[in-house]
Image (cartoon, rainbow over all chains, first blue to last red; front, side, top):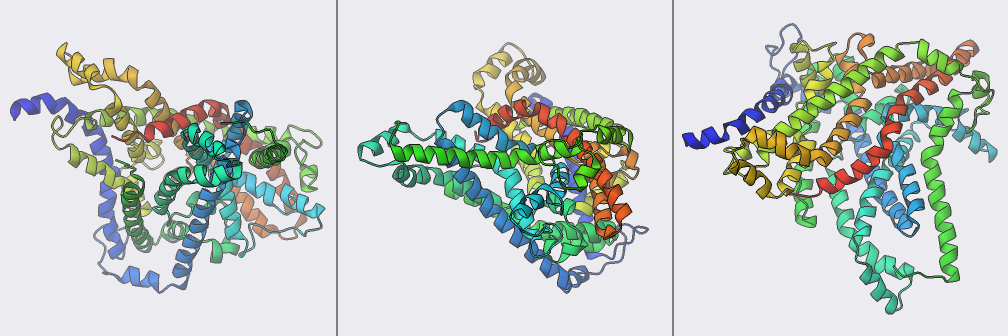
Length: 296
Length: 296
């Protein structure tokens, strides 16, 4: 035992810096979660008075909160659906391009928005979506009156959904293209001998073989269903569209940090965190069962 | 793939190329528009006559962007943060991934360590408790508040760990027989072999650090300490506030338009570093996806 320890001690020593930092910045905050059950007072800190489940009942009695959950689910579900369909279609179309240089150029162009922060993307969107921005100028050519994409509650969620898919589909395309290139060309040759045209080949060979990747990507995104995109929405919303645009994360931020209601904000965060971690765990298990994919 | 030269195939290809070109343009044109706006006069921008080419070419916006506000100081903070943050990430990733790549027998308590790190991927204390810890550590207004809480990116660590496991064991065994200890094995034998994997996770870190804005806003009380993206974010917010308040106030509208070209210039400057390293990034990110899918 002692000899074993001597042999292994360098490994354990190497782990110490990470263990300490993760303990401080990830595990001590777990302890901080107790303020969700207290009436937090910065002067008293963690010795603030206990209130049990009061903060949670208070939140659930707020009409905005249920609305916030609904908005979160609404936007993230459509983002997930679009985030699967668009890259799959784009990858299928791109796969028909045989010239590798052209293929790579298209791929490079659609991948660019992935690398920019939502701050920069929001700057671009504010500009192109403004009443005299390029999109409304373009629509004006067809006699369409300027649309306030970011200031109309009924349109705002769709502005978020479409722009999120726009920013992210290049990444998905790369994943699906990688899956497509691994399909055995012999299958297509056999199909041609059997008289199958491109369309039939796509339906009967390409799509079924792409299915495991599609299922895997869908399952993995399920864990994120409560993350409707804080960076994006926070940078683009305004009080005008709170009723349809507010998601759990932006709500926690406004309540917890801006209005300094630490206990309430933490309670909302805890609620979200528990449901999210269950969803992530379930989706990882599903990914393993359905697609044989192991994260760890 | 078998080549098909029929008429319908040709028609399909023409339509396909058109669709791909349109979608790719949708991803790149907003940036070109932003660039055009940044080089146009504010009068032309407010008249909505700028599309993809500067109207009444001027570099005024860039003069404003570079002299006005704290662009340079926040650029410097962002550079420091990205360099130090990425180095810290890489050191901790290596120091953690190497011991954890060992089997249970060679590292006592390996599964406990692994669980300790993985839990932080699934569950977090949330925004407010983490914020309180950073405050308690006295890191407010220090660049370390942007680096230490995320010092170990667990996902990247798992990628590297799987990469090490994929290396032939004989390399390490022969070094040990020659009398090398774990530290020598890591530094002399493994590090050179890990270069491609380190490039991948290093680039993940560079992009993440460069693009982060939210932690800068909450952990820095003094706006002079904001990294670039946080500073750009405050520009967005002020723009939005003017937009909401302005209504029909014409003078304010004019000043807003000046802000609009200036903001476009600063947004573009903020995007340049990522756009410059982007060609390298794409190569490694694609590789990273492949590496990440090699599961141990």
